[in-house]
Image (cartoon, rainbow, N blue to C red; front, side):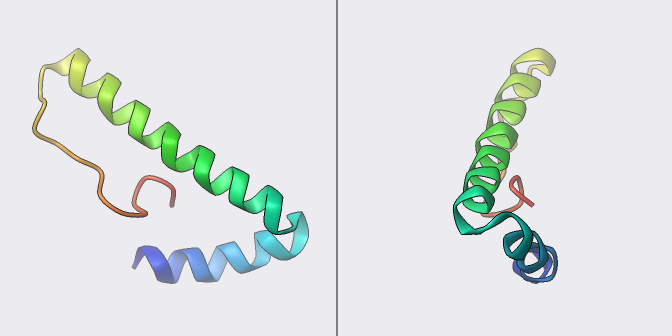
Length: 58
C-alpha cells in the first residue's frame, strides 16, 4: 500500500516540484518519522516498536 500511495501522490508532486525537491521532501519526511518514533518511544518507555520501509515517509 505504501508504494501505491507513493506512486499515486508522488507522481503529481514530482511533476509540480521537480525531482530534486520531491526527493528532499521524501527523505525529510522519512527521517522526521524516524526521529518521532525514537522520541515517542523514549517518552512512553516502549522501545519495541519500529517503523519499517516507506511507512514513515508516506
